[in-house]
Image 1 (tube, rainbow, N blue to C red):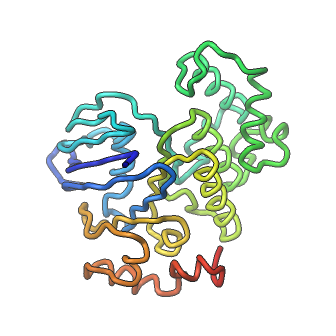
Image 2: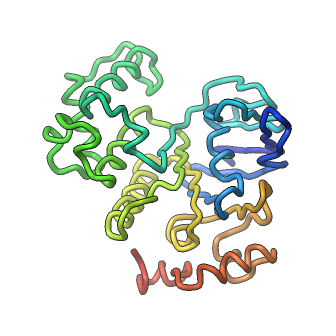
Image 3: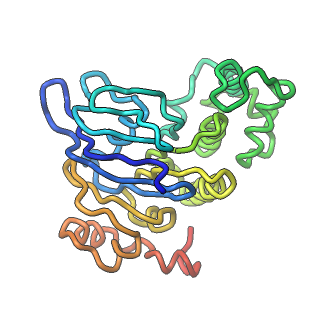
Length: 274
């Protein structure tokens, strides 16, 4: 049974320019599904639409989406707040530069306490700052007290991305949308962030919609992948099928341009992992 189901999603600008056309895909619980394609293919717009975060002048013009069997998107109408969170591709820009990390996490946790978004309405489990420290510790930050006292600009990109992941899982989402989460990170830090996302999926059993332009990262992370070009899904299949039996000419071109990246079997046997 699908956790997320999207059918016939179309996205346009206010002037009628089509950005995404008739997109359909699904994500299962505990599954990582990729969306891959070059810049401008519609990947990020698709991801943003599912959380009601499209920029001004851009809107959903058609389609519907359900999460855990509950419809939350019906054409241009966002019917309900989906139980989903997002990891953005530029964590330093996504975090508030004027607030310390600890203050941002405390504000988030207090909001979740009030709203019950994470299932904890009316239940205060210990000191909120202690909970913030435990949250950042859970994403592999060795000195949470020091990190809580710093501003985003005082942390590395990889450390800020860990903070973003901590904030994303704080609400106990069913679906995590990751939009190019390793952009701008060096290879070692990129591998650490990918490992953290995999561990998060395994621990919490959530589904992940993973947006990337990198076929090597897709091979490492995803069970299935939708290949996008010019606003359309050209192919949606298991990663092994995409790599070994691509059915679309654009998919073959994309693979040819990424021939130096690991294939799924190389990731599985560890010959080119990381």
